[in-house]
Amino acid sequence: MLIRPFGINEFWIIVMAAQWTIALSAIAFAGGGVGGLLIALARVSDAKWPRLLATGFIRVFQGTPLLMQLFLVFFGMNIMGFAINPWIAAAVALTLHASAFLGEIWRGCIEAIPPGQREAATALGLRYFNRMRYIILPQASRIAIAPTVGFLVQLIKGTSLAAIIGFTELTRQGQIINNATFSPFMVFGTVAAVYFILCWPLSLLARRMEVKFSRSTTR
Amino acid sequence: MYTFNFEPVLAGFDKLLLGAWVTVQLSCAAMVIGLILSILCAAGKTSRVAPLRWVIDAYIEIIRNTPFLVQIFFIFFGLPSLGIRLSPNSAALVALVVNFGAYGTEIIRAGIESIQRGQVEAGTALGLSKLQIFRYIIMKPALRTVYPALTSQFIYLMLTSSVVSAISADDLAAAGNDLQSATFASFEVYIIITAMYLIMSIGFSAVFSMIEKAAFRYPLSR
Image (cartoon, rainbow over all chains, first blue to last red):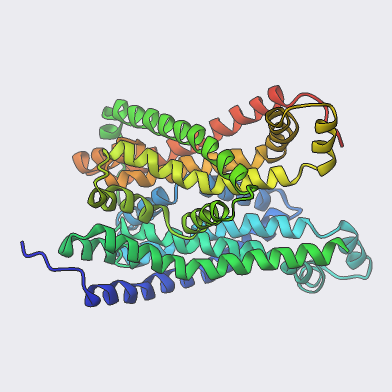
């Protein structure tokens, strides 16, 4: 086999593959945002069954490896009669994964709102929807920002596992280039650097918001 | 309609159990070594030598902001070009230790910061040596404070260890990969493997809460 050197072209191919990592992260984050809100609301619900179901969902997704979740969706789609498509499988699995984690994070934020807020809203005659919409969620969302950005970093890193089921994002592109150039040190160094550039600003942002928030609430 | 066929999975179940045992060993070894690394790094971050602090900070940020899969590819495929050649299992262990160390350092550091200055001063006043102060006045209560965070980080480490199957180490996920390519019962194999991981994480949680009850029975100071 012809081995070509790792040059500027290979470097750009890897950098450009980051768009698929970003796209996959964005889809999973958007889907996970919707799913996570539903899970969080079910988790703090007064009704028993939604609460139990949401708890079970969170337990299973936090208690099993993301890699296995990807495999199960990937092969499960085949069983249910869909054509195997790594792109869709990765998007579905990461969305479910993000739903569970965001649901658990946001549950904590909702529960952190003092019960007096809810009681006062009820006393004012607000029913469930308006109480959540105008009283609880706006306050909870302020607490939620920092840990949510923190989870986004985890999610971006998690998309790398889609490489194992054959979706060509940043890590998979690195593997492909490595097979052609056989300079793993350069290739995976570049791949790691691109992830770092994506994740580090978000990590810093999350930390800064956390500090800002704890300062504003300790007063 | 698809009919599930668990027979080939059950026929190879001993291999899966062996894989699960490797996963447990790998995770426990990585946690113990990683915890030592974390304590050293956390102590190093309080050092007066600035370059040492920078190196530790860089290590933490790099590990926390890159995926584990890329870290393990870098260690397994990249390091041989520097002359460091590791077997899949040792590369897996090194990668898990390095990964856990970065998260562990932050957790331990948070614990150390929760110790009030007066405690250390009281220890000095009682004539305790530096090592005694670090061990009894700083580390012991700090570990208690961060124990829940450490245990959930361990569970996360064990789940993450499934990724080492990508360099064909001998862990549970890799045993699953072998079994599914031999039997083609992919979905069934991964259902069982996923259930085994779930049982392991529930089991470890239970063990950790028992340890917590036994080890931290003395009353809280606050």
